[in-house]
Length: 180
Image (tube, rainbow, N blue to C red; front, side):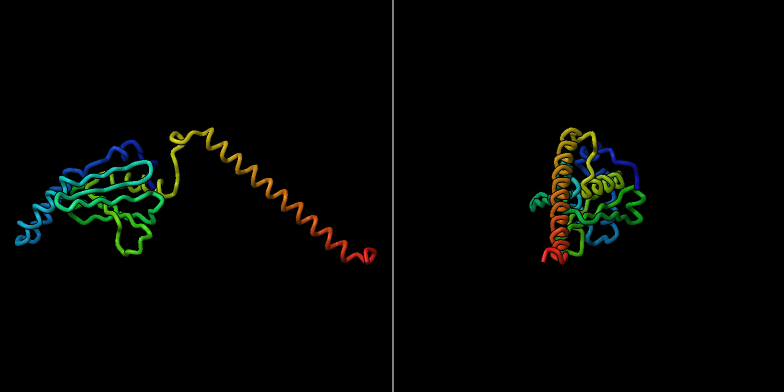
C-alpha cells in the first residue's frame, strides 16, 4: 500500500477533474445515435457533480432536475475497489467504488474523475479501519482514556482471580476428610 495519504489534499477535493468531461463525451461517441441524448445528460452530470470529504464521512451529489445525494459514514464502508477501462487509464482517471453492507451487489457510491484515485482509496481505507492521524487526536486525551480502561480491566482481572482462588479453597475444603 502507498504511504499515508495527504489528508488535507483529500479533504480539499470537491470536483472531478476536467478530463472526466472529455471521457464522458468520448464515451458518447461510441454509440452515435445516442449522442444527442447522452451528451447533455453527462455534461450536466459533470458540471453538477460535487464531493465532500469530512471527518465523519463522504458525500456525493449531482443533478439539475433530479438532484441526487449520497452520504456514507466511514464506519459503514465495507470494501473499496478501483476500476478503470482503457480510455480512463489513458486519461489517468479511475473510479473508486465504495461498498457498504447495504445488501446490494454493486457499489453504493462511485467516485469518478480523480487523478489521485490511489490516494483517495488509501485515505478511505485508513478511515474505515479507524486509523487516525496522531496529529489530529490529542495524545493526552487518548492516553487518559486508555489508562482508565486499563485500570478497569486490571480491577476486573483482580476480582476474577480472587473469586477463582476462593472457589478453589472451598472445593479443596469440601474434599478434605477432616472437614466432614
